[in-house]
Length: 278
Image (cartoon, rainbow, N blue to C red; front, side, top):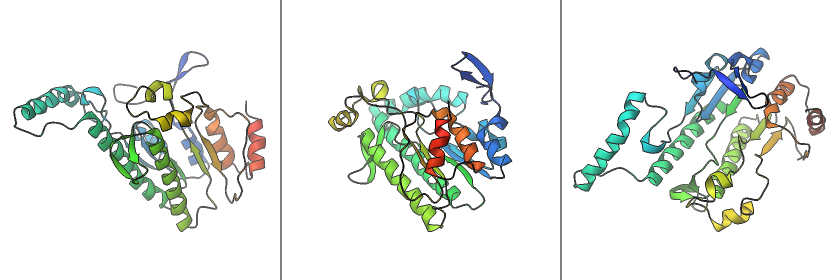
């Protein structure tokens, strides 16, 4: 990142070098060139600042605080004062002059669920906007920590498990399906569902207080295939099909290009195309 918050370069693990990042060499430029109108509503990454020239519609949010109550949405000057502000509030609470600050758990749930609600609302507005026909939605689920209670079907009052947030993913996908179906667009829509990483059990979850016996059973104590999910729904596809051919997620741009160029129409086409990717 540059001092102004722009993405300057990308690291290439194959060569160990950094290459200049150019927004006009992304799939969004491919979509514009193919006659599409682009939209993106996403979490964590400042998309609207990184690729503004190739997005016709853009929204991003990331309200979760990092240690010391710092935030990527505040200026450096404000962030420098935030730890002292928190200490002051807690000191006032200690002497009976204020409510103090919420616990880290309560703060995380509030911020994480707020991000989800905001993206849900903006995502719906983009999904129902007829002027947007190439749309990327980056949702903050099932990212840790859990904030959804799948049994009560509501936002939780304390951290829940990964499986709870995974259930919210399933609920959200059903919501997208219903929304497009109501607009008579589900059949004609190409939908790709993918994760940017798998369930990082050993990195985050196993040593956390939210790890449950159910999580352990579902993940075989972390010894499982942790590659992210990758689902492609083609236009007018009525029956499921499984492709066991390995596919590098970095080839997603090539896949989208092939779809926009009408080179893939059926699951058989997709399987044949995937087998050609190296």
